[in-house]
Image (cartoon, rainbow, N blue to C red):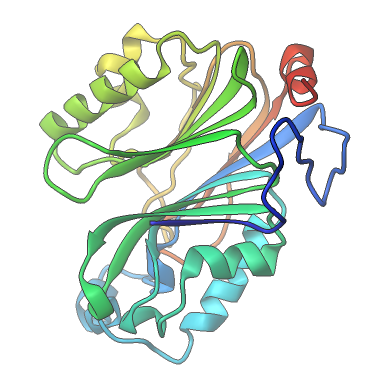
Length: 277
């Protein structure tokens, strides 16, 4: 795992503000969760067979797909990435988190390595952020090895904005354990964002430990999978009630087998002010 702040290390007590917003923390911020499938570019069910080699070897269009993904994420403030490659043969040894951060102009990026197959695969999650968190935690989730959650905290420790980016297991039993773990992480925090590939429908989330939290389950269908003809809602963004939701939508793009899901929220004054404390 690795992280980068694209500025000098902060002195104690010094605040960092974004290149995009300067010292004006915006009233609204834009969130995005995107399983990019390591920029492999599956766009049909038969590609899981005919293009399976792309999981191990690079192809000539891989960098172009990554550039296309960078143009999408550049429009957002906090981005959770899943199925990112940290720099192996299949990605032409490109750390895709760092590459996207550079190309899309993010101040901060973090890569969480969950499966390390050396030069043959660096299976990771990532976050891209316009703001530098004051604390970051790397959590390995319960169940079979390979699932993780990134926790980033912004503002002031007395009243933080807590972002959790995650990728959950395929099995219902494992997801239940993992979301029970997430419930413990967010207890006691008023302002929370949880987003990622949860590998389950929205109505299934209601029957998990998250039902005992204050997170809002947005009504309606937001199909993200498969990208070429989406009919399943596998990717989700959930926020606490104090973060007013302005919009939520699924983007029409097919650079991965998932489509990204986006949300715009309002930050309460107490959170915006905490960035200056």
